[in-house]
Each structure stands twice: as C-alpha cells, then as structure tokens.
Image 1 (cartoon, rainbow over the protein chains, first blue to last red):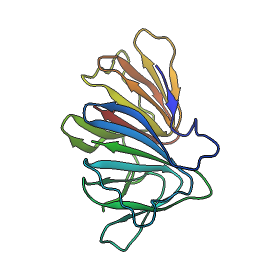
Image 2: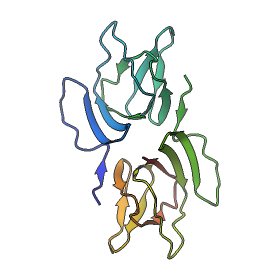
Image 3: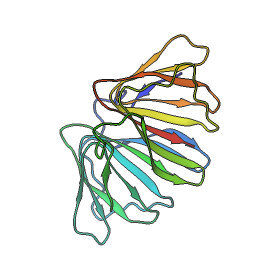
Image 4: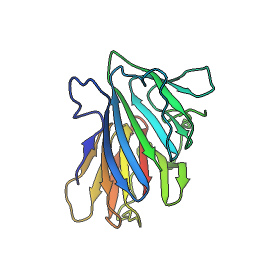
Length: 106
Length: 106
C-alpha cells in the first residue's frame, strides 16, 4: 500500500499556490492545496459548478462569501461546504507557515 | 456558512468507535471516525464495495492488509487508498488520545 503524507513533499518556496489532485474518479475530485500567504486577487471570486467541501488542516486563512462583509477565519480542523455557484474568495492565508487544505469537489 | 471543526464535538468517553457522516451525495460518502484505543475484533476483516480513501489526522493507528504480515503505522497526515474488496483491519489505535480519521467512500 502506498502511504503518503499530507504535510510532506512540499516545496520550500513557491510563488503560486500549489494544487495537487489526490484522487479523481467519476464526478469526484479530491485536491490538496498549499498556500503560503497568497490570497485571491483583488476583485476576483471563485465560483464552481459543483459543491465543494473544504477543510483547513494546517495554518490559517480568511474566507469571504459574496454579499457578506464578515471574513471567516479558518484554523486547523475547520471545514465547511461551499455550495455550487456560491461566490467566494480567500482574503488572506498565513504568511508565516504553509496552509494546507483539502478540497473535495463532488 | 456553517463551519465545524474536525477536532471538536467529541464525546469525552465512548466505548465504541464513532462514525459520523459529514456528507453524502450520489455515490460519495465522507465520514469522520474517532477511535480511542479500539481495534477491529480478532479475526474480523473489513471489506468494502467501493474504493476508500482514508487519512489519519490525529493520534496513531496500525493498519493491516490481508496476506501481508507488516502492520502499517499511520501518523497524522498519512493517507492512502484502500481499493474495493481489499480486506483490511485496524490492528490498534492510540490508547492515550483520540485518533481522528476521515474516510471517503467513492
């Protein structure tokens, strides 16, 4: 059995967020995302065709949804469902350490 | 948005492992499993109809596959795919703290 670790095999420096597909089958995709201080560019929003379940496992991040003023701070273990077509953006991620996320598109 | 935490809302004492469905849609099910020293009963094996992706997020556990003598020790972040019909069992889990897993059946 091939065991890997979510917190290993991370490059030391990376200018862009890293998106890696851990598994993909039928209509399901599981990704590992690693951020190191990046945020969604100003004025830009993510909007997806599918529901997305997301969990933050390491680091910290601020998530904002369209038409909401509050930024939700996520710390390790925090998880939520982002419904399809719900516009959202990452306002900030931890600059002092890597932030590791899982995103399940289903 | 309803944010929950994978490491919260865990009962203090529980004789059996806790299985909670975090989400279920179409042919996909994501579960949180919490162990506190339990193991698969002697001689018993798990065998599933679907592929299962599993990650250990907290604690420790020993996993064994049929026809393999080695017990794979999992520590936080370790993840692997258990193919459908691959018989496996949990030989042990940490007795000193809760072990938190995610299992994605897909």
